[in-house]
Length: 250
Image (cartoon, rainbow, N blue to C red):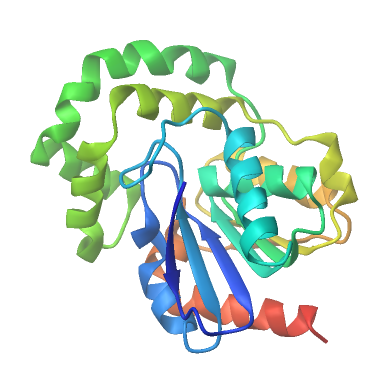
């Protein structure tokens, strides 16, 4: 796994896990806002543009990042945030090692498996994958994701760089993930958030996560779609990180 780092001289560490099909630039503006006060590390998840190995499983990514924290960061960090696939990896980290961070923000993470969607991913991408490299198709997908316009070139470049095998692998993992029982042993202060305009599965997943983690807080963000908080509102996201880390250090 590869890592992008900002503000390396700071003592407090923030780790940010990007969404599936995106990359470190998911959090580029947030990292720029936080780097004066935090050491900000953004892993490039396996199977994504700029990564050094294929995607295998959410559990493997979680174990890799935990090992990195143990080896390089003293075994724990102040804050971990994760979006969608990154949010699932965060939840898996908390299930594997509940004290890996002081506080965490899981955004738009699905924990209700969809057998039908899972089964259709491979045949669907077998037909549509060649279209991904067409700018008109990428533009259409980009607009559906409601990512802010300034990130289109990053999105297009990195989407084109993801292999069909890796894309199928992480999408199938995303649609099959379930919360592990170990999440109940989490000691971090966890906030779970989702957009008010997300689909029912994501909203219900947020409720389930908040119910499963001791003392977790649920925040439904009115008017927002999937991933909009961290991708399109970096200042508000950075402010949330500051509030959460300040509360956790009291």
